[in-house]
Amino acid sequence: MQIHGAESLADMLGISRETVQAWIDEGLPIAERSPGPPVPHRFDSASVIAWLRERDRLRLHIETPRDRLDRLRGDKVLMEINEKAAQLVRIEDIEPVWAAAVSSAREFLRNQPERLAEILQGTPGVHEMRAILEDAFDDFLTRLSQIDPPADIASAAIATDRAPGLGH
Image (cartoon, rainbow, N blue to C red; front, side, top):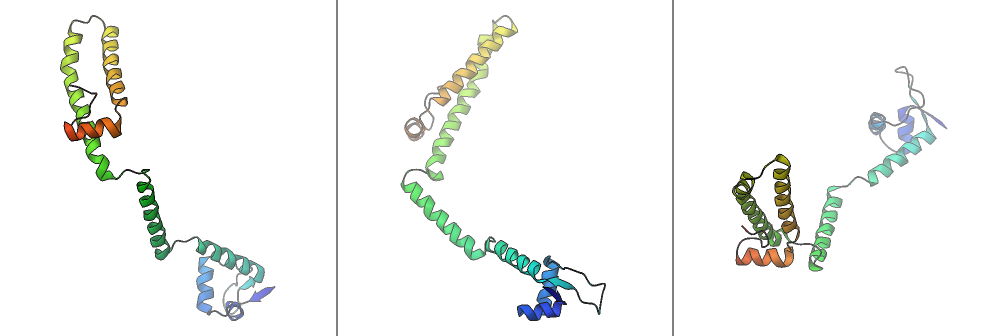
């Protein structure tokens, strides 16, 4: 069914002419645009209804501030449940442990240039030097991977303020 004019469409839908104009600005389909006053636009009722339904459907997916607050509250409850189930670790619990591990790794690596310089000083050939360096890095990475965070790092962070297994 063809509807002639924004006023007729507004009357038919029980809305103002300004609302029809706002919808036109949003993309309400016009079956036939008028060349200008006094000839009105023509609207296809099926296209208008389809557009309104799609517009309403999209609006349902827009998160209002209230929806966001509810979602964030739900996320908080879920995090609390996961934390109680020991699936999450609080940052306050892990930060000192992480800092101790990083500090220990840093200390270990800072001691390597002097140690490796002594070893490499009498080493002939680039291939042999490269092999020594690769062994040193592999040793460090192996030690780092063998740290058991819950047991080793936590106890070391408390007792010595250093992560075990990396040595000097």
